[in-house]
Image 1 (spheres, protein in one colour):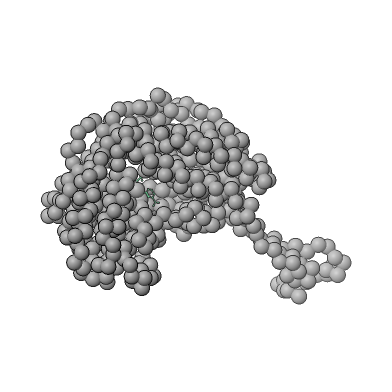
Image 2 (cartoon, rainbow, N blue to C red; image 1 turned 135 degrees about the vertical axis):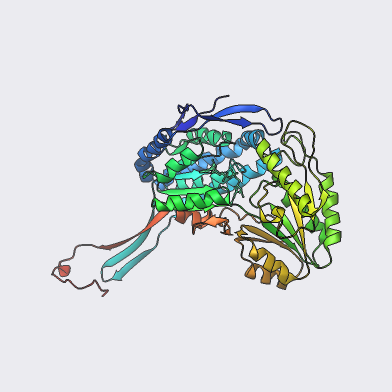
Length: 491
Ligand code: NAD
């Protein structure tokens, strides 16, 4: 199947001559070709967004919100279609794909409240006969550049809010998983969104670089790996754009000696191997404090060994990795971990089939200078690091260059309170392994996990996609006449 771009409300075939293969990771078969946009094609999508902006900005909040509600209803009714596309291109199991759509839907529901979220402030008679009001206005055409691992949810962290606030959008999805974005574009049209408000341009670095330099794009929301996030932030801001760039992660789960070890083992397995570890909020390191390590490793290993890895459509626990290259990268890390002297407790290599499978893998006695500890593997590989004290655990987590998510398992409220105060990570779970904030809070990490000041969705998302303006008003009154060059003062 040949895929297209979506520009100004219609499917537009690629003309650059370049394309990438889209594969079904469970079978290894090439299922579609996605066009890779040239600079000119990317420019055409930006022009469409720019042309649609004035009318969309001037569309009343009531009308804009009605379209958001219609989109919400359609998405809710047909979410299984989107989940099917995600599983076919990404490989995650269907229930996981459905969960991703549900979390994206929550942001749509949040954005349905835009009339309230855009409320400004007003002060009557701030000075004699002078009134002051603050308003927030949309920026213009904005770009979203998304990663492969959440083909629907990550774009939905951004575009419902951007659109509801009156911006127009150019989405550049990951070329590995373009189907979800194109499906969502058609859904917007069904919901009554005017042509050009939501555009999809498929592509790679050429499209991204065009977006970053194009004067028509006012803001960029990026999610992906840390090196590209840093590049996007530096390049986009150098071109005068507002940029939020969410990067990679290496998330720790600290288990204190008083924790419920069965609960901790369940959650380590869920958070380590869910979506085959291809989540920016996946747990990749379990830090055991004190003498619980042997027991906890045993419990995790028993659970991991029972997981069924296979085609995500066929009721297994874990699907394949996204590409052959990803499979090779992850098995390379497993070999490196063995070579470095970590204890390989469960080995996920060598599964049968043409799909890009790697089963759950567990390493014990991992040291902090091993590549399986320092690098984001982005696969189903869980490392156990043993420490003696709570303070060593905090020090270890805070020494990480990443700061996306972290979890603490304990029954000690005081320890938990100290933990969330001292830990240098943006999203903290206390007995919650994957602490993804609700849509009305904001999502984002610290340190190398986010470049920029603004996190995704919630009120920070609304602020990112709007500019503040303060209007000071005095209606003509004969007493105001006269020349006075002094600085205006209240009176
Ligand atoms: P990636 O960085 O390879 O790609 C992300 C996007 O950037 C894609 O659209 C891709 O086409 C584009 N891109 C790739 N190389 C580029 C280049 N050289 N120049 C310009 N653009 C380029 O990331 P990925 O492999 O698709 O996704 C996995 C990564 O995303 C992981 O590191 C994961 O932690 C991260 N992630 C982070 C979050 C978060 O919220 N912090 C959420 C999801 C994923």
